[in-house]
Image (cartoon, rainbow, N blue to C red; front, side, top):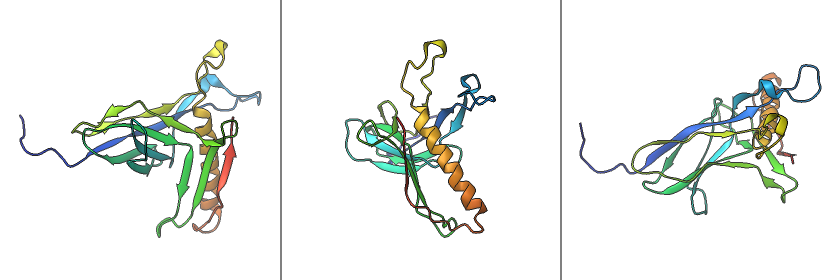
Length: 183
């Protein structure tokens, strides 16, 4: 049946951010692309941007499973951007802080980002998932951008920070900012 009434004041854009994780080969000879798996982009920054460019309309972070949720204006052309950035300023329940980011030292130290395609928010909630891929095509080598690599580097740094927080005898570790360069 159909319900009548005014449209909502906003919609929710939500989804999951993931990346292809390539494990190290068992014999220590590099990466094992045959065992690549999809991993969540944990606690990374996600922005809702106007499709034509401009300042972010909303910003959030993913959870441990890579899920995010943003409030968006109605009927607006936008795109979702995930950044190779994990920053947490602490809360009473989680007092530890960190600021981890992966930059491209061959592109003016730009922050690595993964942009989704443009879409219109309409008047109903929208799901937009993003996956950073390895770009690896087997014998042909890398045939598309290596979008997953900066997120894999960031996830390794994030895991290390969480290990220190969990094993430091307290949960109030204050990490200085850490920038990793990848190209």
